[in-house]
Length: 222
Image 1: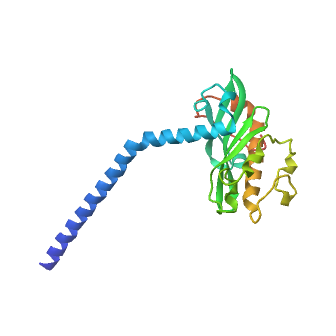
Image 2 (image 1 turned 60 degrees about the horizontal axis):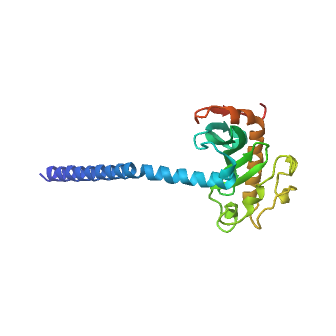
Image 3 (image 1 turned 45 degrees about the vertical axis):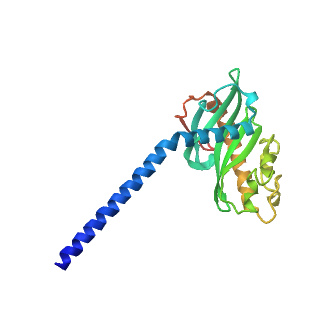
């Protein structure tokens, strides 16, 4: 008798828990459904702000959000996943490309970058889109924390020379942070690799399909 009562209680509690779980899942799904458009709009607005920070909107006249392609290079873009390359044009002529890139060797993990490169290979600018670097030290790569990231503007693989694309502690041309060399070193090295990717794939980047569905897989040997 006791076992029967216990079994019924367990079954009842199981049904209650299952019902509660179903309600929670339903609420989560409903919340996602009613907020997904807002989230998408906010992400699009954040992307637009970043793009315009790197390349002023008056310098291009195309729909940059749709004039893009997916690219991939583990060696030069730092990720085994495809990333976006946004193209800017004016009167149909190439102006710049904005590439997503990942520095895999930050002090606290991966550092996600957005790198703007003018058609002539000169940097329009660099921004950090995601990182986990140490507050007060490595987080100075963030434009909201320091102007260090702004120092990349107008630089290229020839100014400074590729040999100088290092922090000064390693004999290069770029400043590091007091007490935090690993973070800026990772960013400098990755920006240089992104420039190399652009240099190798410039024609494909500007002339590839405008559907963000093509994948360009490259290595330095190409």
